[in-house]
Image (tube, rainbow, N blue to C red):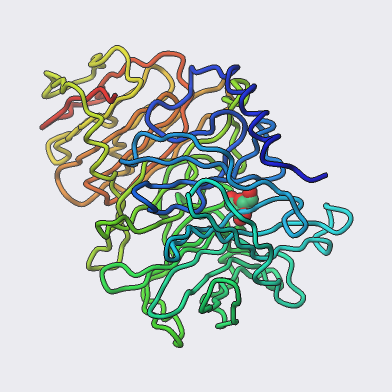
Length: 475
Ligand code: FRU
């Protein structure tokens, strides 16, 4: 069976009228209806930011992948556009998998993985993944050019092309699985249609996974950053707790040379729901990242509501002198701010104090004086489902969600920063929280499914001191 664009639009037109909005985001991108996974083809073209995404318009489950499409002037307000790609075949008959976009003269080019099985789809030997091209002049309607790069001999998992321009050439990294080892393969082209093999850019050591998905490769502050989403890394202590991870390796590279790694793999985000990020360059030179705000193993209670999956806030990337990648929300998020409510709380001792009745689309600023706080636990709670708190005994910042009715309970945490002040910037949407610690030193991103949204501050077994706290309603 092949799928057509017009059928997808028809299905969405009907389905979007039946969405339950209780957990539908107010300021994040989510599908109009149906299923979304990772962001694809992020690009600035013709005066608009474009975000494409893995999309199944026919149900709230993953299925034959289409490319959903939205655009925005400011990275905050998104306008849905017609579905850009459907698995019309022959090369992509079972799915238009992840990929990227580049501007080539006055054309927008999408490079994506054509996914198909010849025979039984439960047998990987029948899997074919090839890289395909589609182009557009208006940024909305695409002409399909079919396969531009075949699978390397003997390989089956070969997907998620990320293309960029370097000098006179186009380059492309592709995620792959060679004999159960994750790899990133490199290719080079003069015209986007013909690609030459340029070797293996990166390869997993034994414990680093059997498959590397969604590679991204770019220059930042004179270093090269390789982002990967490995499958098959074991959890260790507090790290790598999700089914699959997304992280980065910093090093040096130039065309024709090997990528020399200067900093080992580190996770990008430490929450429950962050996978398969992609970056792009804004017209002012910022490197901006969006990720899928879910994980493959996650329960997704919004499926009962007619939709599934959402993207993170766009985040600006920076590299520190010691080669750590930091993320903070793009400055455009400040345009959503309405009135500032300062909370008149400076210290708490063995108590919980309500500060806001309904945090539905809310940015919170919260600064704790950690040096002066001796409470065993102090932090902020969203009704009885979410707590973000300092655990003084383990010296960690803990994000704990407790939604037993949705089957989602558990913790993620990061070490407390060394500074004596803990500065938190929190973004609450209807079913998500994003935590930015000390201006990007760490991030925790998780989906939440609250019935009530009352915010309160607390300190137990001792006292805690606040230097600043308050919130903006976001429009
Ligand atoms: C990432 C991913 C990609 C693939 C796509 C399929 O989550 O698994 O590797 O192209 O999703 O929907």
